[in-house]
Amino acid sequence: MKILHLSDPHINSDILYKIDAQSRFKLALKHIVNNHSDADILIITGDLTHYGNDESYKIFIKILEEFELPDHLYPKLILGNHDNRENFKKNFPDVKTDQNGFVQYYENFGNKTFIFLDTNLAGTDEGHLCAQRQEWLINALKREQQNKIYLFMHHNPLALGEISSDAIGLIQKDEFKKILLQFQNSIQHIFFGHQHITSSGKYLDITFSSPRSTWQPLIPNFADRYRLGTANTDPNYNVVLLSDDSLIVHSEDFLKTEVNWFTEE
Image (cartoon, one colour):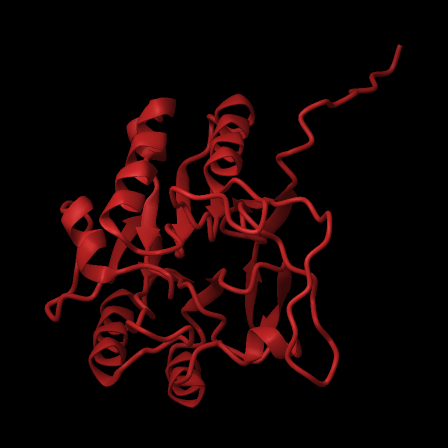
């Protein structure tokens, strides 16, 4: 199974910090169409827009329509801190929500279950998984625990040792940790975005990964104070090759469109 994991396109009508988010998102989609049309699923883990307004979601939809993606590659979407839940639901009425109106749902692919979480709380950059959302997650995990489970969320659910990301990660880390421990044998991997840097590792014997933003990559900050750094780092998305035996994550720096292939003569 090939999974395409994008995050943080931050679509808006303006050019922010001298970077055109629309143009870069289009380049990412063009790269996908040209190189990964055989993928099984495309997932965008939040911050779909920068301002969360109605206009930005309409621009986002228009860009998707430009590329006429096949039905199976129309992206699965979740919310980030820059998104607005009500405006999102108005523009994407077919996206599933839970009984409390949060944009949370899961889908099965054979013996694999993908669970999509909503960590958005209006007016904050931090991630939130309130008691209602935790209850929904626990019930979903109980129903699907016979399968291999993969979690998709916007905010980093653990401290990454990168102070800028850790300051605005998931607030309910301890509660989330307890849930992970309860279903540790079923949960295989956690996919997230938010911090605009690549990361990967293992947490409680569960692997995790995140791509950079398709809009504005940041430089990891390992200093002892909060600061954000940018440079000429390429945006990317991740290509995940998933089988019953392995999970492999590759980074695609999609601005590099000129490739010289060497073959044996």
